[in-house]
Image (cartoon, rainbow, N blue to C red):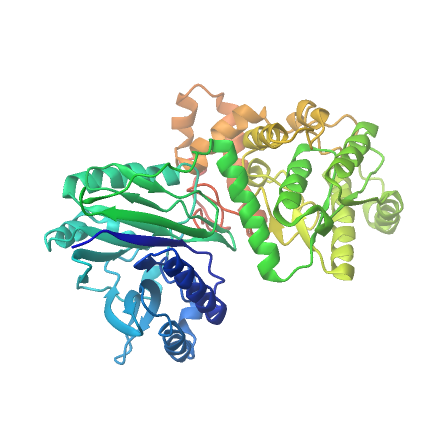
Length: 541
């Protein structure tokens, strides 16, 4: 028995790019070796990335995985534990982990507990494993688990009964607000209860609408946190096992992020990875002088750099001078390419063309939507011409109640704030300003009443309850799945609750046609909250 060092490879795979993932794994393994690590552990399905979805069904996967193993076998003098899709000769497919040293596979573990809830769909792709994997190295007994396995008390108890000292847990655990802390607190109790050291390695990076935060950690069997890696950062982190203490050496944890910092960094990471890995040279967005587009601009600049961001102000008759000034000022402060495109001629042309059909019908939301659609068309035109991805700027509150225009302000390939309620948008804007010497978002943008500026003196609150009230109702209905009567019982006005719920239910068709955006909650639209568009369910029940 001796002391040893484990490297936790907080790894950001490029889904499906097996060759680049393997090359990165080899580099990280060699870096770990240079720093005297005896073992390096990678996240769940690290070879192909998680979630690979129907890429797992491609007929070439077995061949490409075998080639990956050949390349990984060139790594010497360090034990590698990594995730892969295990395709057996009898046609079974497993979410698996391999233990490899000097090109030899010492053991394979097949995940036993397959999550099939929330964003997870593993039973579509994998068979369940039924055996544990235990290996001894350097006089220390290791067990291997994969993500959901560690949340099954029975599975971990079985492993503990095999006299395992440290369990290596490979994970691709998606982020949501508060989840990094929840993982640590829960597994501290488990480590104490079963007298196990827990080495938890989590994937990091954005993948479509999912965010993986990393936040890998090591917990001693006493429940003491020995190592806590930063969130949202790809790197190697090291844990030293000291034989004299029979525990991992405690090192200073990465500073804990407050909630707004955590959300902001998550959105930046998601935007960066989506844009860069999709191959776009940059992004473009409509900068209205309002808070949603202001925050989206800040996130975009922090994600990919000001030189790759273009903002366009598209004023109309009802656009205030203040909005033009604030949009111009923010673009200047952030150093992005900025232009102003008047939409009067476009909207007027629409109205002239439609006049034979509309006649003298009184103006309503139709005319407002034409303004939004003119702006959406301009953004898509600029996107087509120069190749930049359009960022939609709508937030979760608006999308929930349909306070948005299909083919207008909903235009875009990535909706940065799709899972962010309006009240949180304000807090994130304040947070972003707080971390700069000079605020990047003009104070007026945060303090003035929100408005779509689609008619004279319009305010959002003309159509909606105050956002603090609206968001509280939405949270209860969407996140907590409470009934209409339950929400009213909390003290909200019946008429307001009924109206909000009707709007949420009625606008599922709009949300289905919107672009994807990063998930930060446990009830994000699309993957998790999936209601039929046409249905006869009684509202609010």
